[in-house]
Structures are given as C-alpha cells and as structure tokens.
Image 1 (cartoon, helix red, strand yellow):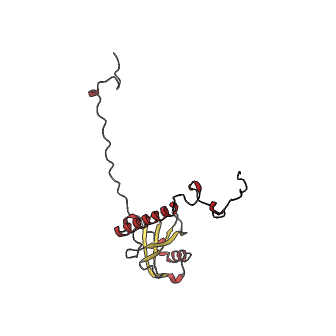
Image 2: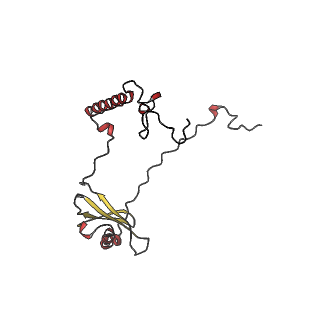
Image 3: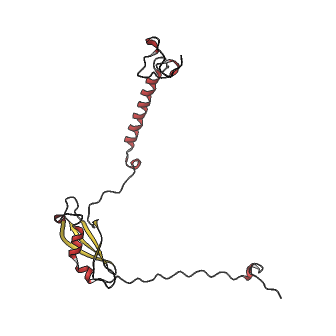
Length: 184
C-alpha cells in the first residue's frame, strides 16, 4: 500500500481551498467622556496661551471626546482674518491618574472658516489667449537673438563665428598681442 501525496493525487481529487470568510467589522464602542478632562478648561486655555495672546482667544468654547482619556478643547479665534477658525488644545491623562497633560495646541478651521482655494497647476489656470501671447513673445525673442547672432555676414562679429570677448578688441581694430597662456 502506498501513500498518496497531494502532488501525486489527481487534480480533481484535491478539494478546493475554502475561501476565507470576510471578517465581520467589529463594532467599536463610543469613547467614554472623561469628566476630569472635560472640566479642565483652565489647563486647555493655558496651553493655547503658549502660542496665542489672551486677546486672540475668544469666549466660545466646545469640547470633543476623541478617545478614552483624550479630549480636545476648542476656543473661538478672534484674530482678524481668521473668522470661523478655532484654537485647540488636546488634553489627556494616564489611567487612574488625576494629572492632566496638554498634548498638542494649534489652530484649526471650523465649518464656516475662510480657506485658501485648492491649488491649480499653471497649465490649467492659463487662458488660451495668454498661451498664444507667450508663444508670440517667445518667437519674437528667438527671431531677435537669431538676427543679432547672424550679423550682416553671418559671422557672429569675429572670424570663425566665435564671439569677441568684451575685454578684448575686435580683429578689425588692428593686431592684438597674445594674452597670457595663449600661443603665438
């Protein structure tokens, strides 16, 4: 009697591998509101005052619970030009601890905040008229460069088509003594 391995077995004898069942999404519970962190407005305001002047922090105040023992305090921003923006301070604490820590402070846009428009590449912003004008300017510049380089005889102003350096006189002015490092 011989043992049959998977490699020796006929293809139809091998049962198809079961497809993995799609894992059902686990329901995540809502984070618990931490009364100690929610009530500590003074620590949150002191954290924001590290980056903003007290007059820049408005009276409006909201708290959002992000995770267990992690909340974000939002204060109205009164800076000119920042209508609808909010100063924020995220507060956290360790389990079974009464010490509140300021994790992060900054400025966030609110729902009605004025934001910069989304960036659009130059090629999408330019109008067809501007493109045509740019092409015309480029063609005129190339024509002017070609006319200046060609000269009356097309020689470039010196023998052999090489331009004459500004510190040396042209060959038509008379013989030029050799410069240092040049052969005679």
